[in-house]
Image (tube, rainbow, N blue to C red; front, side, top):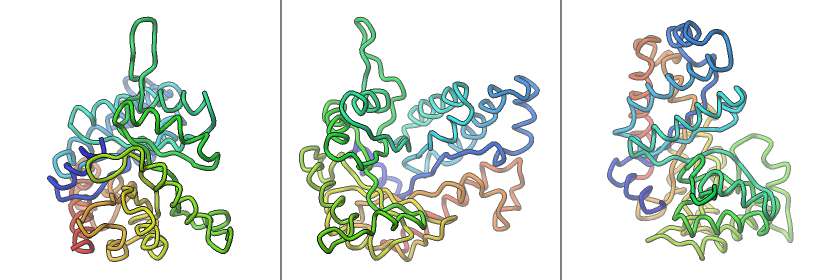
Length: 306
């Protein structure tokens, strides 16, 4: 799957992933109203509104953006109905030939990690059948439990040719409370980055590993260093746009081949119609606003990576 991701980035010229992280307050009123008329003010009604909202955005961006990243918490808040909307979103994006990165941040040990891996990027045995439950192409993984927590995921990556992005240096302001702590004179994120590179050596695609890393756009100096530590790891870059990251800060996240990183924007794209710059599209044109915001982001990122 890492080969497909690099191919689609090359084909579209867009090292960009759109975070499908919907809150009900993001959804235009006309979509919410229709969903509530059909299903009532229920969890099912909320999930239907989110699904229709996602579908409109995906239809508008699928030809220019190679990947999406649905954050599962935004769906879990609506219970089982929300998870159904998550699954419908994953399947719909894949039907449009988009790469799907499930932002699930799982991590445990032994059989628990194996179950997470099977549920999201693998296959579970049901009688005589082998079924892919959520069937994302990549997922995000927490490395706090070490190799015991990561190996079940890399085992599935090898079997299914799918991938993971491991949290290394996250974009949030308090990330340094743990990630910047010095161990043997070096910050923890450097040690994690080195381990990501080692884990990835056994899971190689054509040029990049199935094992990637999450490094926030809000920490460009750390990103520059981690790019050198993990030369074969694809970097998923959150924190662009709403969190303050800018294209000009991201040149060093990419390798000399112009690849090696994919930059995420969530609210900046899916809520574009609420921004002054794109207000002309109106709520009815929310999907067109998202498309224009994606185009503007692509141009910004490409100007930085040359």
